[in-house]
Image 1 (cartoon, rainbow, N blue to C red):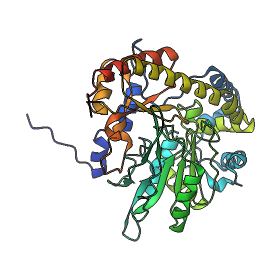
Image 2: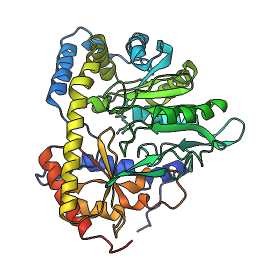
Image 3: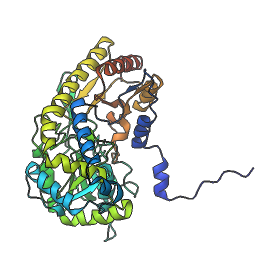
Image 4: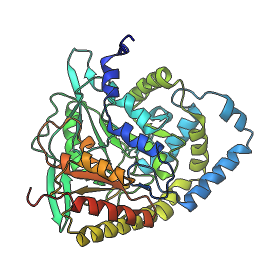
Length: 424
Ligand SMILES: Cc1ncc(COP(=O)(O)O)c(C=O)c1O
């Protein structure tokens, strides 16, 4: 029999086929069998919160009985959304983002992930003047979903963050201002709160960076998937406002609607215009369901109250509970651990400084016991120096039921306890 031939493919395709964190994580979500022993602490699904789900179900019923249903199902939107929806979003978001936005500042996408795959490629790679520009991630670890979005290889740049001890078993990453260098950079991107760590970069640090990016006319992307104005999981930190030079992205996923796939980009009209061309080419149009749901949610001003009265209290309580469950199991079994200050978002970022196997191996050991976590090594795109945290940290979601968190904590601490070096 003739040997199987590799199908011809681009360098980009080859890179995409290599094992990416985001694919492995999303496939784990999709391969869940429903077995009662499964413990799903890996992916970024929001929690199922009955009060929020009741509001979304009401929206759905309203749409199903509305004469607009025929347009919702049967007509394309414009690539980044019809003008009336963009105007409504501009009007509704302006007071929350401290700016007077118009429809020309707004673009809708099929999820903010979809928006980023365009945004990052607009501002990185080979430029008109022949130079090659990179995407600076000012603090890694950073969101696993950015890595591999660039069509060009080696498009990310990151430096080792500051590691700031903040108390017993606690630390925090800080902005490395000493090595902050924009000479090869086309744009700067950060999530706030940060996925995976729950870090929330201060406005003072953001303004410090912005002073430098502005001088070089470089865009600063701030990903607000977990941030203000919804779900607003930012603890006691100040909200982010829109300003010239910033591109903000919002998502409906973390309020409880990841299946709807709606992301909203807020930027200057020129960037929005370019995004519209990209969206037409890549998507034809944004999906209708998200924008029609948004219309109801914004017109009735539902999301601010939902964030304040339901989402924030729910996730704050869940975070405290998860930390106490995991710490008590770790301490019972003599596990050495450090937790990144859980300031916001959905995740705990945990370091096991004495782990004798890699975090990737730990992921597999956990998966063998039906416990899904995410290995931390994926979250450092563009970092080319040695940093032990790339090998000994993991990410866990705390959006799962208490009983599942407890079983997860038990299994994880047993595995880590039996893979700790005496000294490392
Ligand atoms: C920081 C961050 N940004 C963006 C996204 C993408 O969200 P979506 O495409 O569902 O809007 C996620 C999803 O997990 C995320 O964690």
